[in-house]
Length: 355
Ligand code: PMP
Image (cartoon, rainbow, N blue to C red; front, side, top):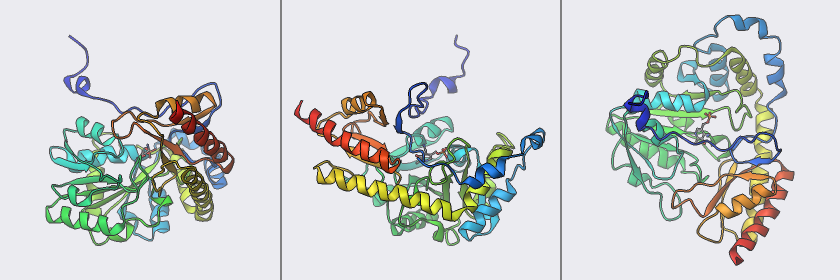
């Protein structure tokens, strides 16, 4: 008999992108920020070592107040967790366990994993032919979860679509979860809907636009009823999910709005320049409202191009699901990184098309 529980044996865990050791790569495979976090972060965590003997503030009050201030909302609309992955997990347990959840078939691949862990019946709705989210299709049931902008496509569903989904879910007494991991790179976000919809749960991360993937901080924005649901799950799992260094670092990062805006501006400019060059070379690239591009090779399987890029010291992400197989997800790096990867993609996609 195995030692693991039936639950543990039944899981199909999430597989994260490679974090290479040893060799130095141009690392464009896990959607990290190519720029350092705000210099205020280093100042904020300097000298905190002595305080680490004490547990952190379980409610991350100063951090929540900073997030609230920057977003122009009251602090009781904010909940912080150990990366947005943890906040997502709490949300699945709090609002979806035992229910039938609808989500796009192509989206963040952690959702079906949480669904399995927390006993959620997970039903998928195919993206349309052009890889956009089928909002009407998602209205076949409720609750609903989606990433907006979506991953790994990068495509943004206008907020009018999110509003219709929120209305639909509210009519059925269900939560709409909108994962805004990449919203800082998009033209708009769902924040203006939070006061109107008591069933809308927005989840965001410090890992992308704030360059703090190594700190593990994410947060939810919602009305207090939903925040209370997240708190109940947190306090049934780990009372102190965000440590002292992470609270101080994230607070400094979120308050430095000018720095974040400039870092986002550079990433968006490099993204649009790279997409323009690839399109001009006859390569299909989906429109992106994120810090990555979804690029199509000229064959059925992009794996050989991914491997060839790896050989040249460039890491990008490939997914083996049938509809994703001909595509590569390329994180937007520095201007110099993007010049290199643009040249390499045009050359290698051309080579493998001829082969
Ligand atoms: N949501 C989406 C759509 C993502 O791509 C990611 C990053 N893998 C996350 C959530 C999780 O981010 P983190 O746990 O670093 O906050």
